[in-house]
Image 1 (cartoon, rainbow, N blue to C red):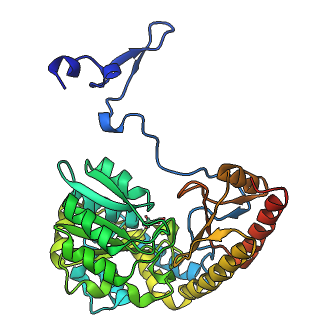
Image 2 (tube, rainbow, N blue to C red):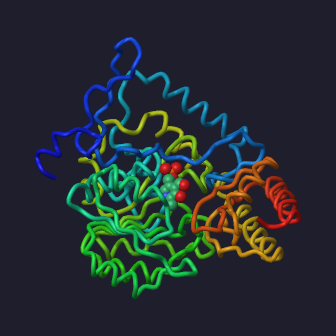
Length: 387
Ligand SMILES: Cc1ncc(COP(=O)(O)O)c(C=O)c1O
């Protein structure tokens, strides 16, 4: 960019003019001087119309039991008496509990927590990505990875998954060797396809990667083979990070609690970029109550897994394709006009997600009643002629 261009204003790609006329009685509208690389971007989020059956954001459909609501209320009540004080900025008790939940011999210094795993990903890219650095992912995958890369000034490179949504280890390693990325994202089970990666693939990428490897395991508890978690690789790879969330299996999306396991040096690096007191005392207390009630919460995972497998069979019995899924959602297709199907379902009070490769829709697994409502709605849509 020449100096002349830089001074010429927003219309030609430079800094936006500080004031723009709005017409009327000589009023001037202040244009916020948004970073050029963010100009024109919309806030992230899919449509959220009010509907009876919401199968669009991979939530756990089971609300907390009355006993859990009481336990959360009691915990919040006791925290409320101390809200004049900042929270424990290192979330020590919560990290102890998360380490105990994860097992694998992990301890507090190998675990970190933040407001949802999205904030975990943001902190990872703040610490290990950023201007002049590159992150690599294999798409289609979780769309927040490239979006957070962009907002942290990290260059994003999306390599393609295989046609069946898997990831050939040879191709993955070649992409890593060629690009030499500072951060590699592997999502397993992958969103939106539901595909889990074999541990051997993750290991080959870890061995080839020059920088950090982040395995996003937001849906790990829903996998058919839970022993496939990358947690078991942590002792061997110092630059491996396993990111998790309480939003899905723990049915705690509203509390916003994401976490990771990694080497203590990685956790210390994240403590440099985290904001002081980032995790509220209420969030910490609520998450600890949920962890203490894991025996009550986690059985919903088995129910949802069974519902998912039944659902996949049903979709295929209708002559449609359903991607094999190790998560709490299923990608179904292929529709000639997926938007029309999405809209037809919405018109019948069922909201799913229009995401993933063209022709496919992602359906989160809901309660038995919600899935019955989905099946009835889709049958109606199909009987009217598949768009
Ligand atoms: C793969 C993946 N990672 C991370 C997240 C973020 O979850 P949260 O910020 O609620 O912890 C999601 C949410 O859908 C996801 O699908």
